[in-house]
Image 1 (cartoon, helix red, strand yellow):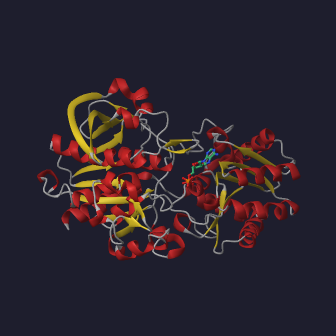
Image 2 (cartoon, rainbow, N blue to C red):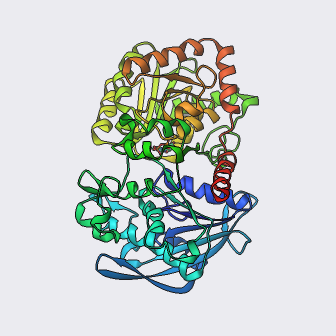
Image 3 (cartoon, protein in one colour):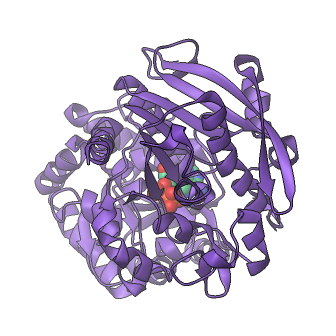
Length: 489
Ligand code: ADP
């Protein structure tokens, strides 16, 4: 089976967030599973700066029509394997192939998608170019993939191109397409004028095409043309069929319901492992939970909060945006502080919420520590030192922080939605609540506090949480099964 993963980013070659982690991890797992896998990425400036010496110019050139223009691109390639320490290394191997799509005018930029002032104004052109360039390279090199797996809106037009412009091309005769939606909140919506950039005309600008409330939606193009659509948890796959979670695309998704699947993301346990974590003061495992307390002490010391080792310490690590339920966290904290709970908060996001959490710190300086920023090392210390983690998301396609929290024995208190509902077992590995409100979150925290005061019950729950397996190996097997199913079908 020959599989192509096509993404706007993948760790370690390029990354701005979860998408990069997921695609990078999938690529690695497929190599380890012996799949003949290729990964297509843009040749960004950061990729060139870090990997220039290990990639080869394949001397292929191709043209991609962008509106009335033709843009010419190149491709650089490398062969990749995975070493004994589970790192991707660029060297000849039987399986992993890397293809970087090169077009300096589009990709030789400081950032991947935009600057602080906003998205790059030619992102439609950039990702149409990338998507079509991938297909041009497949044609030029006669790469006969069984599966082309696109990720998110940037590459969502690939399945549509394969059923239209590239339909007659023999190298795609047996190719099936999979499109994974990592977060329906990001759809690649552009003004109507960008339609011509896609290479489609008015024949595609209608409700069953690319049109989305008078605009052009790239993701929609993929949703109605991919053989299979996946999203990153089974519950989210059901939720997005409803207007409440569908971001205006629930109608299209309902039409494609028979081809929609949910496969939960994994976590890289090489990075998130309390037994080997070099960011934390004392490594620990299920067998020596008392060492987790050393991490709690350390967290209390470095944050300067006045919390005894016996007092409950609850944390939040994540983006301070509405999706993550930061509004109800902010509303709940004062009441919980009064009952003796201490808080450590780390995140960045919307200015309004960043200011709100800073205000809380000013009001209760000895009870809450707030860090507004991104600090990987502090995040590890928080997972290791906290007793519980708040994850009251409005919606959550998969979520990693609850999985990481469980591995570190910090009990997740989560809203029962998306991947949170699929990974946390209520009263077994964490606490789940239904309603999106400060009141419901407060009840969730009080349910945790009841257990917290009973050490035997608490330790049992920590044991359950730490022993659950959400590794990539498991998720990767599900993708392979899915591919095999559509190739046969
Ligand atoms: P998202 O929707 O942001 O991708 P996830 O729960 O899937 O949410 O993943 C978030 C990841 O980013 C987690 O590993 C979390 O620890 C990390 N993270 C989020 N914000 C910060 C921050 N400010 N500093 C350090 N790590 C962060």
